[in-house]
Image 1 (cartoon, rainbow, N blue to C red):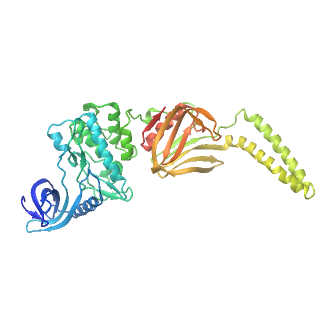
Image 2 (tube, one colour):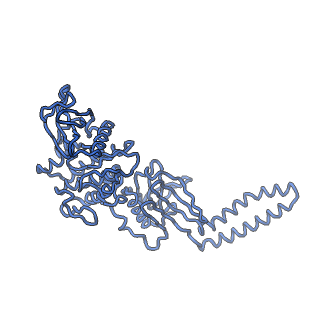
Image 3 (cartoon, rainbow, N blue to C red):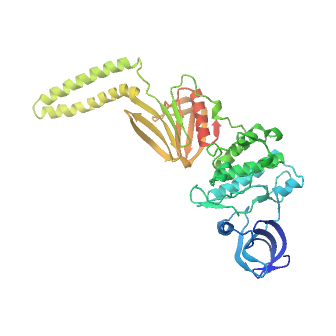
Amino acid sequence: MNGQILGDRYQIQQQLGKKAGRRSLLARNLETEELVVIKLLSFNSDFQWDDLKLFEREAETLKSLSHPCIPRYLDYFEVNSPSIKGFALVQSYIPAQTLEQHLKAGRSFTEAQVKEIAQKLLEILIYLHSLHPRVIHRDIKPSNILLGARASNSAGIVYLVDFGSVQTVAKESGTRTVVGTYGYMPPEQFGDRTTCASDLYSLGATLIYLVTGTHPADLPIHDFRISFEHIANLSPAFTDWLRWMIEPSLEKRLNSATVALAALDDSQPRISALAFAKPNGSKIQLTKDRDSLLILVPPAGFQSSMVFTGLFALAWNSFIFFWTTAALAAPIPINVIFGLFSLPFWGAGFHLASLLLFPLFKSTGFCLTKQQIAFTTKIFGFKFYQRPSLTQDITKLVYTSNHFTKDSEGNRFQVSAQLDIWAGVQKYEIGINNGIVKSEVELEWLAHELSDWLNIPITRDS
């Protein structure tokens, strides 16, 4: 095909790659003299209608993208020549080799360089996954990642190419076309389900290939997870981060590129919530499944300190009852005046009663679902939700120890530990000062339970 002209102006220079029904060609634009890449879909014996659907989707997706590390869409046209019938997608040419080519040429990468590549690819994924609708690549692997010029110890400029398997979704849902490459595909992708976290799995498997030099499909599998630690000389924190990226369970895997990038910068290994059992003597009730997590502090129950409060409340309310009864029996307008005068005293009486009833019947806590996050109060069987926010807005968990804070009246006091959950600009505090936990041990346990359920690392601030 070399020398052949497509679309009246693209002269083919050489073939770059070939797979069933498709070819990638290097061509020169005769009008601008620029090199371009042409992806050609041919109507031959290998052609399937799903191929055309994906090819058109790739063209539409590239047309909507604008990122310096993604090829630019240039042209799309039908090819109808005696030797070729099909469609052509033209995109900008990037003069760089793939990670696959670098590895086969004998190049090795340091941990710092692999982390640099991971960071740059995560930044690309943050861009793709934040679009509306989201763009999920679905085929991240070494042969679809280009590595450009580098300076000193830098890994080089990183590009993500080949959007032939791309999925664009308004919200995470299934797809009928199973695409991807064995060894880099997460389990859910085999079941026709793809989410943003699926791209993270593929990226993790790609990075494992870089640090081991072995295709992920050729590595041993333990508990459905790729086992790479025995042949990779990596720091504990980076090893743990990679394990988090390739977690087979979608619910336990890092769930967004933004969170994955933040976790990559953390120099401390992730500690599994399994290592933090519920402290002995804790009365906190924690219930969780894949759809919700509920933290409930049961009623405190009867306390010896309530005896005096109870006797005082009984005496006070008895006095107010007889006062009001006597006032109502008096003639008008005396009964009205004394009746109104007694209202504040009734308010104080109800407050005293609440001091007795709330410890016996009021539960407080915290509720998380896939949709919202809120504080919760349960009294006499009724639940009340306060300050709800969207769960998808949760960006970080901040554990603070040994700090000072202020109450509603501006008084400064010391708090030994506190966990802040940030959902956008809304902050939810779980700590000893608001009565949800009684000790730092309980707070540490809850922090890791929340981190595990949300797939968000804990940021520590002393």
